[in-house]
Length: 79
Image 1: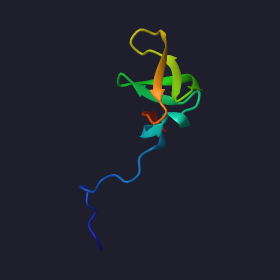
Image 2: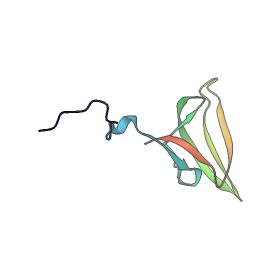
Image 3: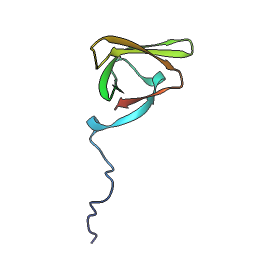
Image 4: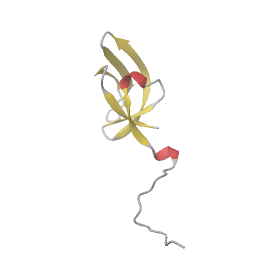
């Protein structure tokens, strides 16, 4: 018999609490990203040459923002 060790890292987390990095090219409308340490929902994404534009509502002033990203950028998302 083995003793349960409470100092072990948690291997499984409930899906609603998972966050990860994702390429801006993979982000779709309706996904949640982290901006200003708050969750925001993506309204639209589109490619403009070598750049990507993602729009969302700014969590600090409730205004629609269109953010420019390089095609190689990653954003922190809620899975």
